[in-house]
Image (cartoon, rainbow over all chains, first blue to last red; front, side):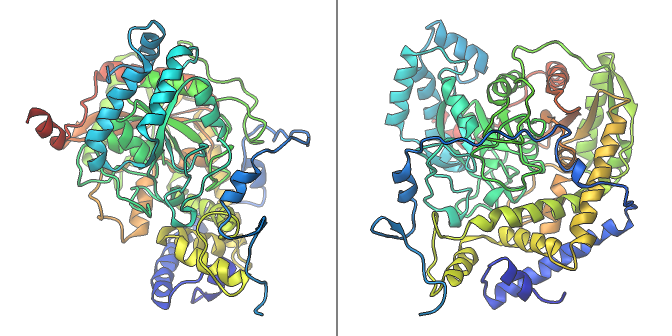
Length: 94
Length: 483
């Protein structure tokens, strides 16, 4: 991997050319540091997912309906509104 | 009055020796005097509103934290306050709900003063990555307070509140506590509900308290811990007891090989002071080895960045926060994130996107997950031989503002000793032990899962032997007070 184009697009980030250049230097320097992990001996016997969380099982609750009364507060956070609707730009250019 | 422990403060209020308003006024006067120089708060509630709450609490003093002023890191939702995570992308965002910890504190009568500055989305170890302001270390205003909960640590250290909450993903409570001479506790993964905490790395994040002494930390933990059905990763273990049981460790372990490289002499000196304190108290001190810890930084920055790149996908300018216009939906998202997110946030998102991308996933993300399992196993082994592990909290003392800002890798190394604890989901405390060159040095105690009470007991032992920790001199304060 030589440049950040693909990563920037996967991450939905638009940056200036100048910023991209600096970010690329920093990011690839850090990734190079990560290569030390190649010397860690692991085996296919290690089950990473079983050790990802706490030993206890995840406790899931029953789904149930609860009243939600704070509609106004949520709407106050909308960056753009049209009437009672959240406004978004079109998916494709008009 | 401002130097009272939380227990004595609440007791005094309940016995009508003083009122919540008198306590509030004391701390408010302090804030008016020092906040201008420290810049620890991102937002403060207006005094008149706090006064109303204090008067209400005077008539209703039932809670275990009645009238205790407290500050919360700005990634924890509190209704009526903005939650910015010190990011432009969340500018003006007002959450419509309380985090569970905020709800629990309010229920016990705590008075939430404001929200504290942090590294943007908790990405950093100096609080310099805030999009809004630089917070200063109360012991030396030219130094950083540590991070990412730097604002919370500075609030406690400068006496603007007796208690603050932070979040700890790789050391973000313990490292700033060590830098600011505060006690900071990172509970076991699952001990405290994270509902209402803006997620950074979900397999590592944990909320915890910062305070001046161990007793206050203990009380705070008893209030915020426990099962919450709104956070499926929260544990069904009962909350931490306060007052807790006397449960002193008999064997404490330490890893001499960790001190060989890149650790300042002052830190080593303090560390060996702590060891001799425990020996003097009749505790057996034993050498142990954690062979995979040296890979902790790489493992952590791969996993935490991967999880962050996914968690931060929600900040797209669509439903809340700052929106930067674009001709299409995708353009709006790219523009919003390009402008709204800071440099370190972009670095982490890109690192995480890289580690998870096709062709690199096995070599980086999966490899790091497996190596994490080895670190966990190291700790499991060691904890069959010892009750607690003693470690420095940080490899160096507080550094100057700007000193590491241009070298992310150097900055990451500030988390060397705190990261492994999060990777293994363990509880740990940082407690200030000494001042070297007028700057604090912290010591870290790590315990087994859900054995917080043993850590607290051991921390109390250290605190008692140490005596009162010298508060910051705050030169600007002394001048104005004498004039």
